[in-house]
Length: 324
Image 1 (cartoon, rainbow, N blue to C red):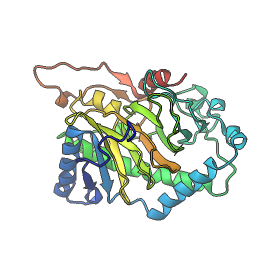
Image 2 (cartoon, rainbow, N blue to C red):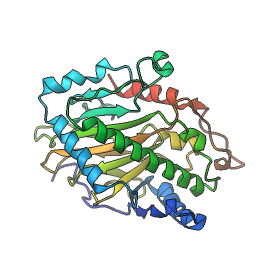
Image 3 (cartoon, rainbow, N blue to C red):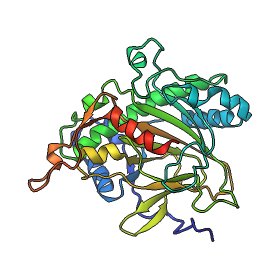
């Protein structure tokens, strides 16, 4: 058995139907929020269904993702992320090391963000992750990815309202963070099968917590994602579930809630023997927004654990640690 095959079944990662987040009855919305609270206080990971993103659109995203990664390397390199000041475009295998003191990650990716023109003030100021995308010369690719990103922003906004309720805050608490949200990233990922002659601790994606606010992961049918279960002191599989997303909290939410909710370690090991594709969507709101500990999350005998920081500066700090 591979050293990565601990407990190859899902343990207590809840599945939450969020369809009632769009219900006019606030009590039904609060029921969803309560389930989210339980998940966030446990592992910070949960599945969602009832999100409203069509199966047809999700399938198209995978089809176009595969079409891009199937291109010859030299064609993919035409869209290299190194040519973009906004971290957009193609990232080859082993370009990122998410787990300290481990080999680089065995994955290749393609980054897409909110489109900004070259003469946009934020682009001219070189604000983090702000700029034009690099669009592959694949007919229909851009239209599908932009529509998908638009829908994922809507789902993320609904979840942020639910998280506010889950913290006993006004439902609109995070609205300013969500307003003009421009630090959003759609990331297409391709994981080759785990090499038989892999280096020690080499894997598709090293153990890490996500940097930002929320991550909504679309998985194909191949197993790969593992989540650290602190209570069980072991890695558990987040199995692919039809029509679902895996949602997890990022570091910003830990900082914001003074560790009431925490981000959770996770990693990817593709021992399926197949090519694995996944599509995480990272939602971190407005890059100018200042994050500071929510007063309601600080008890009388505690202090704020994190100093105020802008979303942009936090991301700059994190990227400097994981890219060589």
